[in-house]
Length: 155
Image (cartoon, rainbow, N blue to C red; front, side):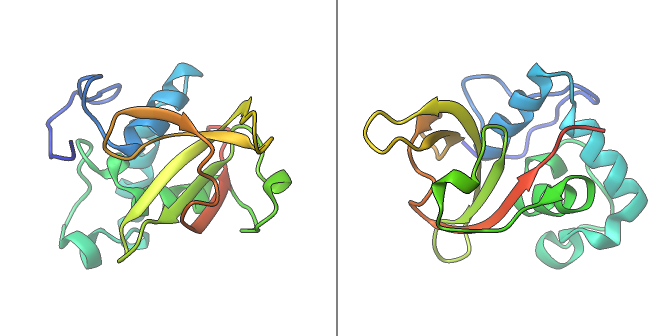
């Protein structure tokens, strides 16, 4: 379920049984000691005009409850603080730990993380994502139009 929820800062999270695609990314990074809520918020405080908030959501200031939970904001953050990698149709160009964003159609953004387990049929690395049915690990790399490919190792 996608809704606005007030959460603690730093280290805040929505309940585990809820969440959206970005929450899987945030939880993955927290598992290795990186708090994207804090990192994204601090970058947005310093560089708010570089993020789509004014244009897309008509916001006038950063909000640590939600900003890190929006795919377009994560895309800007990963472009700024990580590596932007080529978007290709070659599965071997996508490695475990890479972040991939998609357009699901009609401009609906989505994000997932490549994991180190391969699909037994295709041989491709699988993706952990959440598209409204809870976290899943699936071979979905080329299911939608890829709009971003990133690597981020933390601050």
